[in-house]
Length: 261
Ligand SMILES: [Zn+2]
Image (tube, rainbow, N blue to C red):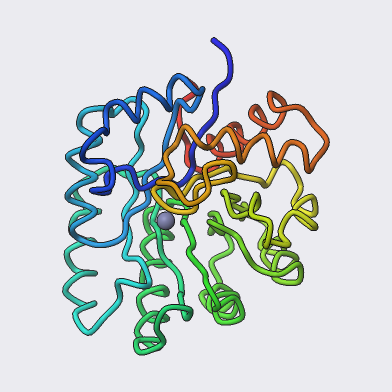
C-alpha cells in the first residue's frame, strides 16, 4: 500500500480549506499522508473540528485545548467550556497548549496559569500534550518542571528553538520534537542541528494552513506538502524517505495511540 505518513499537527478544519476540503484530503491520501492529528485553538475551532471528524473518524484525530495566543480576559469561561467538552468527547491529546510571548505579552501571567491548568487535564485524563512554545522556552521548561508530572508525555510542536533549547527540550524524556516546513527555509538554522534529535523522538507535521515548506513556501500549506518536509529531513539524516516515514509514523502512533492504517 506504499508510504504511510502521519501529519501530526494540521488545522484542516480552518476556513482556509472551506472551498476544497475534500479535494485537499484526497491529495493528502494520494501523497501517502494517511492519518492526521488535529490540534485545537479555541471554541470556534473546536466546533469546526467536531463537524469535520464526523466525516472521517477513521483517519482524522481530534485533540482539545486552549492555544496560548487565544488566552485573554475571558479565559476562565473558555477553559470551563473546553473542560466540559473534554468530559464528553474522546480525544487523542490535550493541545495545543503552552506559552507564546512572541505575539503579545499582555496576558503572560494568564498564559502560564492556563498552561498549568491544562497540564493538569492531561495528567488526569492520561493524555499526551501538544505544546506550542514561542519566545518562551525558559518559562515553559520552568513550568513543566514545576508541575512535576513524571508521567507527562507529549510533543514540542513546530520546534524552531536554538540548539541549546533543543537539548533542554530533549531532556524531557517522554517528549518528542515536531518538525515542519520551517526546516526547509533558507534562513532557518534548524537544519544545522536537527540530527541532534534521535530519530525515535522525531515527529513530522505541516501546521497547515501555515508554514508551507519549500518548494511551496508562501502558498497555503496542506497535508500533502508533508512529503517535501519529510524528504528534506530524510536528506538531513542521510536516510531514505521510506525509512524516515516508517520511524516517524511509528513515533506518532506511539505518542497519540493511533491505529495502524
Ligand atoms: Zn498549530
